[in-house]
Length: 437
Image 1 (cartoon, rainbow, N blue to C red):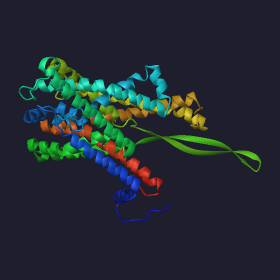
Image 2 (cartoon, one colour):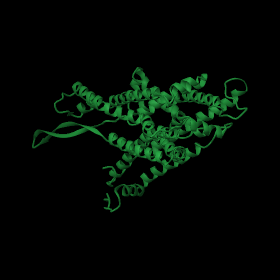
Image 3 (cartoon, rainbow, N blue to C red):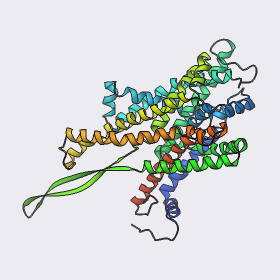
Image 4 (cartoon, rainbow, N blue to C red):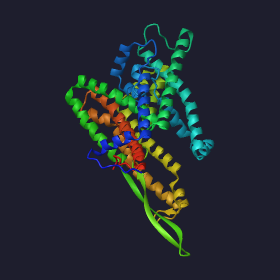
């Protein structure tokens, strides 16, 4: 196999050049980019009967809608056919994750390997459709209460409003299904996790407008302060995301030499990440906190949205606790799926000083629990970074920008790191030099 030539170019630049030289890797990158372009086109296809000026004013005054727009991939502020983004799919995934431990049939499917995972994914897709219908109707009712629709356009399930409402709802559900389909095609034929990349594309596309809005309302000094805070948070995210605890493991194997059997031992380690849950707990926590506001759209209970609004401390307390709780929950789900203790015992490996089997499982559980505290508080601090920015910087526009950017930054950094790792693996398989040391 051809060895890569040494180059004086920077490591990252040279790695990207090497990646573009490989036909299959280049096609994956171009395919991912093409899917993102299609997503941005769909994000600008509007539903009929919307007052654009009133919609822009509503988003300028409501930070919570800005966060909903984050999970929609930047489509909600246009009230397009993809206004719900992939949020119904995320909600369905949360429900499935909660149901698996309590329903034996789902537990059995989870243990069936690839075939079982495909079946669970199919159930998630089925559940996504009614969730999209419920969320879509709640959003439409909420926007109607805010006067976003033009005069004469009514939303409801009776009378003359039934047919227009059904048409708008079906188009919005179709938009969500299409975005999830795009995400899965990216996962299958592109680079990175497709659903995360869809959200990533919306965040990056909306970032310049958010910075410009904060500059106009707060001035350059506030934007510079926020930029420094975001850089510090980005460094913190990368530092914690790459932090691992190495668990030493010894392997022994038997081999024949000269007609006699010898035992040969070798050592390695299991890398256990401090934040093995990634950005998923933050997405789950935001999804849960948004749910009451969606339900309030059905009954017109604006007080619910005010009570859980970002201007009060109740919202941030609940967000902090939910992020910590979901971090432990998701980490333990992932850890149980890996079943490391059984895998080690089957391969003849053991942790020095720990008996194989159940003692090893208990030891690994204790280690995971201890290091997860660090990852949980890390994610929770990132989640409440807008509250910190309110104290340090102040200003409604600055806080709104930080609300979108802090959560968005974790998603962006997580997606970038995951994509870099996948490109790195592709390059190393071909003996190219990557860009992650």
